[in-house]
Image (cartoon, rainbow, N blue to C red; front, side, top):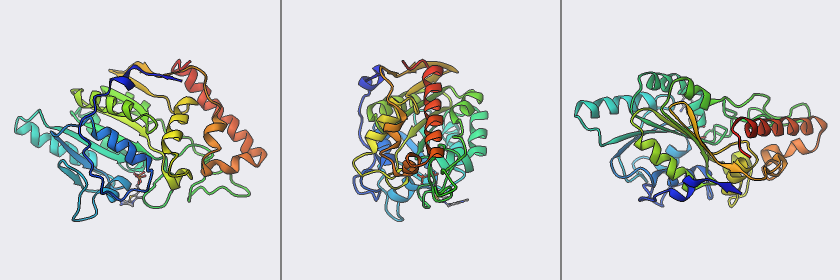
Length: 302
Ligand SMILES: Cc1ncc(C[n+]2csc(CCOP(=O)(O)OP(=O)(O)O)c2C)c(N)n1
């Protein structure tokens, strides 16, 4: 169903996360982070935002990470990474790569100003956003990445509510507007695609941004076995295409032979369950289908 030459070209390196972490069973973010880490190699320093990935891998004084890793605040890993990069540059160390990891709350919302500064300065830093489409760590609150129609603890579905009425912020366009050299999108449904893209991001001499949809078991309301399937359906519907931009040009998209209808993606997630029982919900499903159709058109996915 998915044609992507990159998927078969990933070179799997060592996984940098030890098995002893505390993420939920089947966590999509952990699947994505493990796949990302396989592209990083040993010469790397990671600045991590507050969020599930930080909390589940580094309960003080333990760490699951096999590489230097620093946590500061929810909002400032981009600035911390800038400082690390500046220190490495001063030491003439260009071999060591600097990576930021953050959730969508950190990336789309609270850390955005400092990310903007980092990109404005054109720094040689790879930023990876694990997009769970909510603030997972603090109890599934809506973020700027929450899609329309999703029920969250701050946008609960109910008699007079169809869930979130906000539209997902277009972070890829924000990155493009900053002239970020390498921009890519992937999902936890395609770990080899993630590994291949993180490798390209690391090899980029300049700012790189990779956004990975990472299904959250409680946030999406899915079974512990379903994170990869949901990540694949997100791609196969056209809602979350696998793609790459290099120097502002769309250079790679994964084609979808026969797009899957969004209902198939929505119906296995309890955050969208309410959409199937009311007329307003059915209208919202049509709207979500129109978003997928727009992507299919915009990126030439067929
Ligand atoms: C300034 C500040 N505001 C709020 C918090 C509380 N907080 C910690 S983690 C978190 C949510 C993280 O969400 P996200 O970035 O999406 O990562 P995820 O947990 O989903 O991986 C929040 C709101 C904080 N630590 N600092």
